[in-house]
Every structure is written in structure tokens, then in C-alpha cells.
Image (cartoon, rainbow, N blue to C red; front, side, top):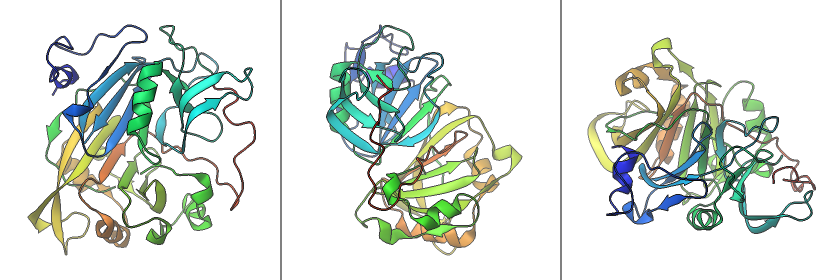
Length: 325
């Protein structure tokens, strides 16, 4: 399903093939997929941002990322905070409208000038109108993937797999911080049962993270066989159907139906990933217990970007985002 054909669902608005955008241009068609989990994908190579909902591309925009010496970091991020009227602390109170924070040390999405090339101090600048529209659709905890790779057209397939990102540092318990070095962590009481569930399998870190309502509730090591490793990102979205066969997460329970979308690179066959990516059985059984329709799994070669944890009750650094504009 080439991205151009997705946008062509709105007749007459987009030519065939990948959208051709000039600096400041964007496409916005949320009606194509009015409901479902939302993923934001930033391609630094293309200076483009793509929005996927329920695995379907609903928007594309030009961007301006970090210039030389202030490059925008690649990785998998979580939206930590949103502020409609944020202003820079360093650059003469310069406006950073519709700011969506990705790290506590100064990386965010926000409206700004787009000269047609990387020009920021690390942030991802968006056209002002697009920044407003995106701000209205996202929520804290949504996933943002930043990569140097060019975006792959989303191809629909049928999988079943395992496997998350970061959260507000004030929400990171000591047990989770310790689990970054070794061992496992699981505490679903940290987030409400009603929150959306997102899972990230980072092949770069060989760890799997589980988030609910944007808060990390579990983490564990994973092992990926050589044939299961790849450069890129695969998105899986869980449907409502239950299949009459064992789940790879918990063989004692039935398999869920998933739809997969290759966002970046060329992932191997889904059966190869399922056979080649393993995490502790008890952890996977706990993961199965929190799955629900709309759960997303991101299997990626990128690292999971996690902010440094703050002491309980502590405020973020005073001079936040001062080098972003």
C-alpha cells in the first residue's frame, strides 16, 4: 500500500506515488482512519514526518530537524508532555507553539520556520497549521520514531509476535531503572487498566518494554537470533479476533490476530521474527494478560530513548528546551 495511494483516498488532493511536498507543505486526512492507535514517524533523510493511525498513513508533512552539531537524535521516543503555548527560555522568549516534548533535555516537536533543510537546535519543526492539527490528535504516551532511513510504504501482512519505549521520568520506579542493566521488571499497578497498551522490542538494546497509558509497567531482556535481526521498524496492531491456535506469548492460551506494517527497512518474514525473538516465558505470559484490541508492538533496530529518572516529586530542569528553537 504505497503511501501515495493512501492519501489518494481523498480524491484529487494527492498525485499518484509518494507525496511531493515543498517546505511548509503537508497533507492531512484523518478521515482515512478515524480511530485506532497513533504512531508518528520522522524521516531525517527525507525531512518528512508521517502519521499512522491503526497502521494506515493519515498525514505527511515537511519538517526541519537539527542542523550540523545539533543533530536530532534517532530512536524510539514517547510524548512526555504537551504545551500549546510554550516559549523558549533562551531565545528571547521565542514561541514554540504546540510543543510536544520527546526528551527532558530539549528535544520536541513544535511549530516553526521551515527553510527546506535541517536548521533547528535539535527539535523537529513543523508547519504551524500542521503542528496544531497533530497536537489535537496525539496524547501523552504516544510513540514517535525518529530514523535516518527513508520511509517504506506500509505493507499489510498477517503476524503474531511479542514485544516499548519511555515515559515521564517521574514515573520511572527504581525497580525499572535497575532492570535497564539486568533482570526483569513488572508492575501493572503503576498505570490504570483502562489505558492504551504499547510494546517496544528494541533489537539494538536487546530489551522489551511494555507501557500502559504512557507509563512503563514492565521491561525484560530479549534474545534475537541472527536471522531475526534487521535494520528498520515493524509495527504490529492487535485486532479483536482470537485464533484457535497457541499464542507465541503463552502457548497455554490462544493466539490473537495482528496486522503488521513495515514502516522502515525490510523486516524478515514474520515467522522468522516469531521464532527468532525470545523473552523470558513468565514475562511474556504477563504481557499476554494486559493485551487488548488496539495494542501496538514496535519491533525496531533503533534504541528506546529513555529520559534520566527524576527523584519522586522533583520538577524537570528549569532551563528545559532552551536550545531547541
